[in-house]
Length: 502
Image (tube, rainbow, N blue to C red):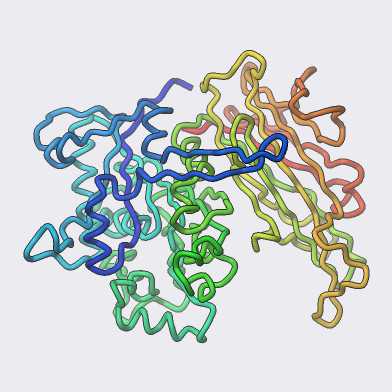
């Protein structure tokens, strides 16, 4: 695949709250995209090891050569330069017009206005850089501003959103709104009815207004089956969207009091896990909170997913197929836990664990005994052109797979023979992706078959055979170890699919 020119990146921040919150935000030249984080992990000899994440803004500059062009003012810079480089980062400063510290008559914030202002910025960047499109990177409500642009503003103008936006990445965006587990919805209804600090933008009726073109909107509000997470068919392609989902409500709760307790455990402290996703989009789960010191945006995990989604050239998908759970184990539910680690990174890229309230629920086989539908486990993006040391010539990732069972009787969990956090099956699939003609060469081996440490393993022999004759698609089935057969079925396997990404 030929090298693709880099596109401008536009960052769109999240909800700021009332006027005082807006005034605080506009004082930051980068609207929070420049915030990093530090934390301590246990190193050798039980000594603390310090880890510093510089911020997504600085890392895009250091790792990808992106330029940050302000020099006294972003708008001034654009006004005074006829040409700008396409590998540049821009901040959608939509809150500036609503800051009382900058104007005697600030504009009341309205999400549609922010989306229209975003379109003006995108047009300017395309015109001055010559880039065909831009990447949108958004946190929280910023993702809804972007979706208003691609689902309402551009369609009303008769323009194709894909002509303006190439890839769209969201950190903890409430694509399905913000709901509360307490008070039987009273808190949510109060927020929607009063618009407290503008928070009605997360309520269904208001979301329906700014996500639906006027010509398609019903006067009585959203239809009963309307799902705010859905991107309508024929609109911006969901496979060009990546949703980073946070699973740690605790750290957000420390800073924001009752929020996490009101939203519930299956959340990042503000946005519930199910509401942080767009159907059919790519996604990754990371144990981070919505924002703050241990938030999604200022995390190494978030950045690594962002970088590979924007600049990777290979997409690798792993699915569990041929699944036939034991039919005789009535009253037993089965769950899968997965972790995805990429070689050379200090953090995991994706993890769905029962301890984080987000295991994968495994489906029962069909009534006729045929295998259940394929179960998506993880998707990652790799950059085959990234420099690598000679001793590690392949791109390597590890898929940790654990299968757990929960037994019930009369709707009550049984603990008589239960071993908490003990997997019925556990192993690690080590996958190496290298270069081979006419397509990628892929080697896969289970850790249980490897002697010694994983880092000592060097793939040898013939790579896995390609089972898909189509050009540009590589596919193989990796049989599960024999120890998994009594649980997952004799024919269960991991299906790996590698396709170009660009």
